[in-house]
Amino acid sequence: MKVTAILGSPRKKGDCFNVIEMLQKSFNRVEETQIDYIYLNDIELGFCKSCLLCYTKGEQYCPHKEVTTMLLNKMLECDVVIFASPVYEQHVTALMKNFYDNFSFMFHRPRFFHKRAILVSSTGGSGLKETLSYMKMCAIGWGFQIAGTVGVCGATLKTDEAYKQNVQNNINHLVNNLFKNKESTPTLYQLAMFRAMQSKALGSSKKKDISFEYWKEHGWFEKEYYTNAKISLFKKIYSRFIRKIMKKLITTKLMIIR
Image (cartoon, rainbow, N blue to C red; front, side, top):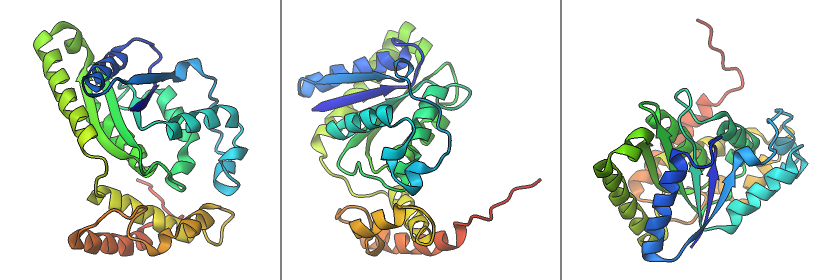
């Protein structure tokens, strides 16, 4: 099992790192696993400038392509990617947010359908739900299958052995399920995301955007989902209903003034 961990903490051995070590312990119980650590604080990934070159021409035209190409290849070459960020003001850190911003094109041209993602976050007391939800949305948008989420209170993890053992037991269960379930059927959330991006790609046919051609090449305009995973009749009906709604909701004339 090849695992890459992308850490958005400015501290190398903080609470998220401690959780990843617990994950490695669980992986090694099943199969000896080495984790390749990528510390975003150590790489020179510039701020996304919203130049839109990744949208209109391709990710190879990004001003930060030397770094983004390296990161993209690291994710493509492994079986599991661990995305880890502590909670900063009820959200991911600036380092992690900039990482996601630099790969925003991935929502429009996803590719990680046979990869698993584990989402890790730590907090001093609040914001876990919001932070993990955002990370989950990004992972699903990029095509990942979610193997699990791990959110902890960092201070308690260091001082309460019973709490730490409970976290480890739950991580063991998560990892065991990861090894057992090689493929999973799309969730309603994943189907809704697919329909949203399908509608978005259809709308880009007359714009200077390569997403339309990307979707056309993959045959996704005629499909129920990115892969050939089995989808129940109920989910198909739900998905088609969502598609009709998305066509009406996706607009470039959105405005909020209060």
